[in-house]
Length: 96
Image (cartoon, rainbow, N blue to C red; front, side, top):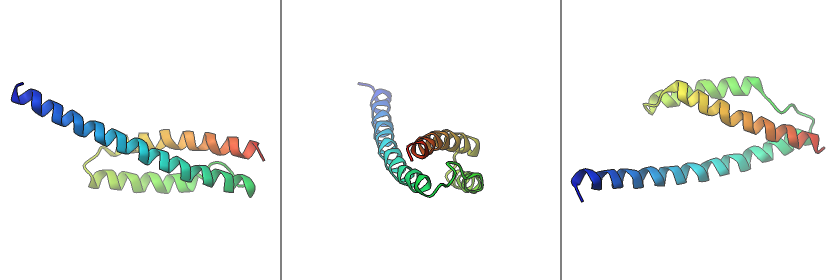
């Protein structure tokens, strides 16, 4: 095995570990947002909170810059996740 092949395998193993951690973190995030959705449904609150989302986007963009991550990517990721969260919150509201 060449040095480049060994390095590639090590980097891929690290990527696989990070991917696994991300999946578990996302699962935990969705467990929390599910509880938020139930709370909102119980109290007749809207599924979406545009001012919170705006604040979070600004915060995540700053964090992305600090982490040397493209803030546009961070915002796209957040918007993708929030769309799914809102879908869950809407479904929770419909069940009440």
